[in-house]
Length: 239
Length: 324
Image (cartoon, rainbow over all chains, first blue to last red; front, side, top):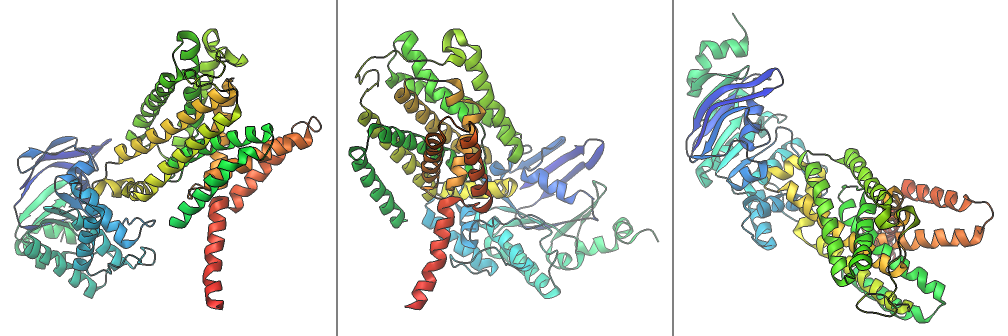
């Protein structure tokens, strides 16, 4: 459904992403891993429209979307979460998500309908959906869930989940991983999942892509990645 | 909300009987307060979302000068001239707003760009003195009592016009406040990237509120010009007017419907009161006291006067209920 070809991003003299190509198939969960500074988040920002590619193409169901603004990418059915949650503190929890439901598709739904969808999304991730809950005082796990609920409320076909589990404890991590897995099975959402923590990710994803210094060094099954010499070298250092 | 509506209605009713109550000078003050309250409310449409424009003096100036110039040179009625002035103000707003919003000029930088804008309009008016009269000002050709020229020597006419303008400004404020656009703009004011990520066209939303604010401000400028029958670049454009708008709106409170109106009431009566009181002794003392009071207001009441009062009342209400 998403085809990335020769994608590059240069910041001044620094090549953050270097001619990456990969494909995301309908209904799969693709893991995108790599050490810090390997270009994972930059790749995400390029797909989500937060950055313009220096070169290369990004096609969604055959249509070029590279370089479109972020809101237009969202309207085409790609939603993202941010590595560090970015809630709107001036709005209530429900308003945060209802806003996403209202603007996410640009189909002119009513406010009541937007709130209904927002409640659904909040229920799905396990957050309270009463109108009085504020974002202030929510813990790290709840804020991650809010990011996810807000992305889901835009009714995406493809979800870009950016390091969804950083800052959570082991139990919360397992729970969140299961949630991502259930999104695919229950709602048919295709997912690209960027993650530092390889353990949980390996259990859920169908395939992984490993980046290092902006280049793709591995693509394949999670089990193979764990034994691939280049991946091991990048993660554990030369032996 | 309905309580706010009721208080607005009560104020309007009070306003309707006021002109009969006092001397002409009093009515003159009231008209000015209503016109400037509309302009401050127009500014607050943007200002409340942190889009702090120091350029609204430019829109007042454009709105005031365009119909007056068209009337004197082409005999064109203000009924056409005022929309023309509003259209030019919208054009200016888009020409400044589009690149600013596109290039993410926000916060202090946006304030600086708009500050320059208000001075550009002032300098243009001064430089084109062959046409505008420059610093000496500009007087529309008098036509007596005329609907065609929108000129009325009787103050009551302008009182009603100013009252309608003010009610229009309040309704626009209410309309924005009640819509989902308000939430989108709140989201944008907090985090433009996160807002764009959920499908909000940040550029379009910001341009829309800017255009609305500029248009309403220009209309206020036009009515002010028609009423005063004398335009001066210093009194309807430039940094001084922009600063007056920003300070009064913030002092009154930009997050409440009647905040900017209270700001206008306060600043205009204060300026006039101090001016009358000091007269020609201690030249400058009036302005110094005025400035000091504004600074104190802004430091100690960041929510504005109305916002602070509302908070104090909200804090007292549960206590009163508990005492029952």
